[in-house]
Image (tube, rainbow, N blue to C red; front, side, top):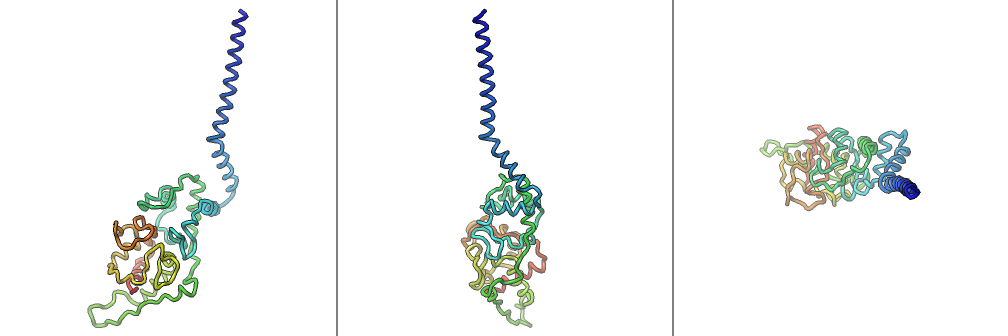
Length: 264
């Protein structure tokens, strides 16, 4: 009888010990795997409490290193285009922009932009809100060098069959759009600008003999006109990092085409 009581007591002690170890072990496992994330999320909530979404977006944009590829001025980043005037150039909804952040390749096949699926909804919504506040801070060339871009003189062909398709006013308007929409941040024209290593040099664009239709399609959906082995060897060629400008009016798109086709 005594042995039975002793064995029962030992069994009870062992059970209590196992329960104690189990609870502690579970807590340890939670600390190793789950608790830091919960604590981090809690800290983020504390940090972002009361902040407007775009303010949260600025913080996330900086902490996630977006500036390593994108800049907010006309010069652009070293890999990706400038985000200057992004809100005017984005031709989509906030949800579509969020989807691009989650899966860039769903928008641009073979995109080199990483996924930001690790961010919380609050952080993603903040980045979207921030990007959609970005308006152009540039009304034209921001230094003397950029102001030296010259437009070729169109020959007067009155009475001939080769009358220019575009007027000089369209070409001048196209130049303004080229400067004010961040194009100069990635492309060089007449030796001007710092962005030529991202996009191709456009100094002699008209000599490539591309049709007006090609130029127009390229402006609307840049990645739609490229195939393997085409033209210049430029960063992001197959997953072109050039944004689409389909949100511009038909008149402005024609003006951009006029400017590009005037470059000789």
